[in-house]
Length: 298
Image (cartoon, rainbow, N blue to C red):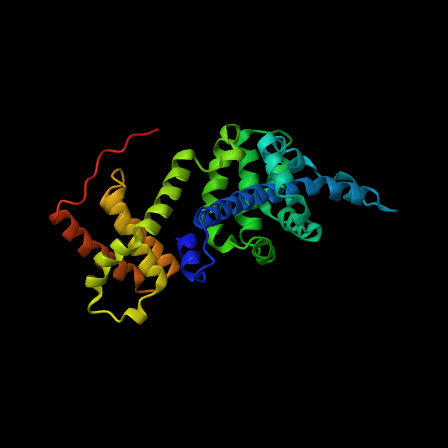
């Protein structure tokens, strides 16, 4: 959707063959960058325990409290898992993500962590178990990073599409923490999903005029100038899924585009997109143009 919107806003003559695919790949790359950097930030907050312990022990007159700062979280199993992953290291080096870190912000986030009851309970237990190791890392993400306005601004400043990807990041982080050993940082998005994204993109561009021929008659009672550009794109995408993606059920298509319209367009867009797509679908079914098959897993 974002790629198609960008294509629509480009000046005529500036669009070259392959532009759409390049824009899509750029968007997908940044999604991978955001995810990689989020995990790096989580690890750096945990690792700051060692920096804090060394700084406090090095004071001219350290207190008894300064000499017993816990560094347990710095050795968290998930921190070692992510930082030692070769794919993660490749991503960090390829995109030079280390230079984005704001050390002062990392310090503030760590201090916020140390004030929490869950952290105090974590370091009070001298042992390690998988549940508590995962719990404290999840806490760093959900309660420290995700809810900190300074960190959110930091992500917005560093990544153009942070606002679009933020919600999905929670899912990706959860998936990683569930099975970190099975995660492939060099292919965060499966080949099947990549193929679908590229095929949908090129199909919408190729079939745009035909889709508009189906959509326009349904807009007779609507002022064309008041129809959001995003709504039009979502309807074009929906029609293409009806006609050219036999493994995607029509109900799934409609529900997903309603959700996208609600999230990215106007308050009335969900109902509007639902009504138009439903009417078009009825016509296509009547003309026997919608052929769906059972989806086979690759």
